[in-house]
Length: 207
Length: 208
Figure 1 (cartoon, rainbow over the protein chains, first blue to last red):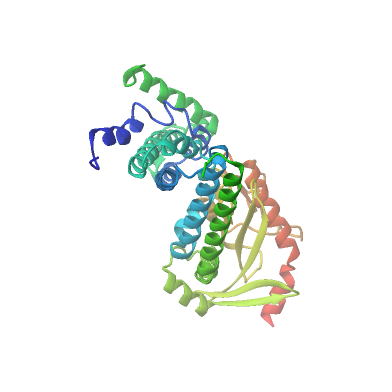
Figure 2 (figure 1 turned 90 degrees about the horizontal axis):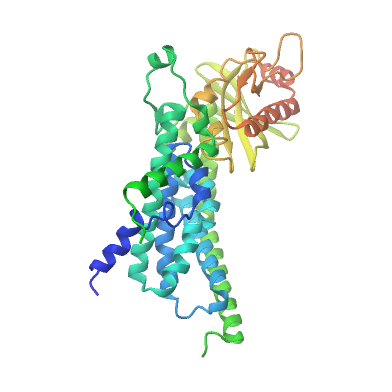
């Protein structure tokens, strides 16, 4: 099978739109509410989940035929937890600044439903390479929504993007106010609902 | 061998756990010295941050630290005596509880009157990104502390604090939006830790 056959392309591209982990599979909602009040943590979390999903998918796919069926969830969890811990330890030694920024997310990554969902639904029944693509695709699909929600919340809630003030001081002087509601996670749920609504209305076709 | 049998399941889980345990132990011991060095350097950078010397590159931070900062102790309590631009500034380490985990920080106090804040830096273990984590990430918020008075005139109670409604702008700073509990933690940390140091005594010690 070619590395980028039509089937593999679908595995990679579907999670970005038609089979998006957040919008269609409705996985990973909690973490997408928690880390999207600013754009930067949303991007960091998106990338971290992408990397971990891809590599845990590969490992599980490689050992899928040896895993005893009755303890497969535990095996998946052990692999994910070990992988996340090792990565965070290495970062702590080599790139300390990055590890400090990520430390808050480590727990959120291990318990992310997308990881377990993809391991169980895809990696357990597929070869390593398609599993890798599936992991990257789902991670990026997740990151995409996080970035959309994070950007909206930071812009409307604080008037900035990635920490840079976009709405000028003169606008505030003229009476413009930041929408403080946007910094609360309840607003993230409502925004997420709107994103899913737009997606269902314009892009998604029920099978 | 059948992968559904009890024996296989038990052996598989034991082997898996042993492999993972060894792997983690190996990674941990192999990387420990590098991590410790990073942590020590990060602490120095945090102290420099509290002196408003932010974002120095690592080698420069190490050098500046050795030049201007002296570690001192009074009754088991560590503090740092620093020379900044001809001024004596004292830095006090802080430790407290936030919402989800520990918070810490360094408070730099002007040695001239021992009650004006020179600068501050906060750190946290696991506060929510974008909310409680702002105590560390939001430099502007930390800069609001500069110039605040630790004591009010004629009183030896710690007045410096973080409040949702600021009644005493000389000593109090606005809480972080959406992070009331973390802000309360910062407030309690400032009060508890500064009370433990007898600031006027340290000032007398320093002048002798």
